[in-house]
Image (cartoon, rainbow, N blue to C red; front, top):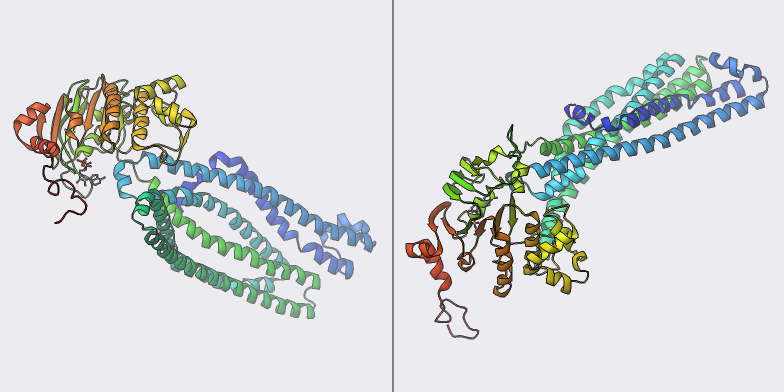
Length: 605
Ligand code: ATP
């Protein structure tokens, strides 16, 4: 019920359509009640000798003696009722589709937007396949819930109307037709208590299948490289088969439930038919009246089935909604503080003061980090793998918030600024440059959406990318990239992402091993572009290859979450500590092949 109220707000933008559709629903229900009456009049008053029903005397009275005309009018009326009712149903189906699709899109948009607002920590915990499932499939449930109202109302109205009319014809018969109700009530209760959990499991399994597909598609290169297509296929198949098995099991139960309801209504119809025929022999009712009652009772099956099916699918929807609202109700834990101000353009002065940070479930990823950076300074960050270098720089754009300590930008706590304006101050170039599908120009423009073509070319030139874009790509800037820019080499992709950073023109730059996946010749081209990019910006550059950060004003050496040394290249060498160790490991020449270099093929061991 609580979901129902929450979902109602998605109806608001479409309330006119919903209102018209509601009116049509009521009209169609009333027409359904009229349906069997022409048959009754035909049977009793045209073919038989019973008087016309009182309400029709003013209309049909004058032609009551002209049998042929009366017959035509009555048959025509029957046809007219069906025609109008079908016409209205078509109009209703248009309105409902527009309503349903509009609501689905709005609900899905909310989910999509919210997912983007959730923190990295949230996304670290969730598998992306599950989220895609929630956004794409479970968003239907909100509209589905509202759409279920219409058949429920229509069926209930028809049921009540039919009962009332039957009651005016023959009370005993009407009460008899109610005999099946307790049975149906019990079946619905059984359904709700027994099938709900199974449905939830099935939904979970179907989401899991999507996660496997998503992972396999994004990991395709690894899968192919390890020749694990068969393994992945089996994983997908096994999961899929489990999901199919569970879905079939639930569907069988749902069908059994429908069968039980249908059997009950069929038994009810048989009872009414037998007892009605008996009443005719006693002269208590006419044959036409029995026809009307029988038409009702046999068509009661329709509304009842609709109600039971709707209740069945409602359960499915509630479970989907529970999952979708699970996402929507997750409060983004990285938020704007009340009173946060917009930071126009930072000077680039950064200070970490006593910062401690741990990922969820990990301990002491960063410990007591304190350092200060002047505007325009280039800071190298080095250290063994897992030391916490990437984590350290992720705290500045608030991908994560530290548990202890403060980070200051231009002397103010970064929490005092709006998240959006804070992130505007930072450009990031990653080791693995991520490009979107779309053209080269689109990818560079991502840095500033309103950039002109001239700005884009300028950025490309600064990033040493213009030459290959112009001469080596078939359509230059308009060349379309594959899903993740796979048609370009690593060095080319990196230059595109540097051009993007040029265009963003943020005062702070984070370079996370931007050249470590690139050969030394290309590295020098990229380093030149980066040098240009760093000019006048506060830069944090993480590097494994120490040669790339030699020129940094200052180098922070990290180990196990702490800054263990800091200073310039020469100062650090003189310290004779971890930096010197890393340095001598990288500069050591393998003088005996087979010891520290590769063993030549065929060398005796
Ligand atoms: P590398 O040089 O290999 O990139 P790094 O120094 O940049 O390493 P980080 O990526 O900052 O190291 O990771 C520091 C520690 O935090 C590691 O032990 C890592 O396993 C852990 N870690 C990194 N990201 C997450 C995450 N999203 N959730 C939990 N733990 C994480």
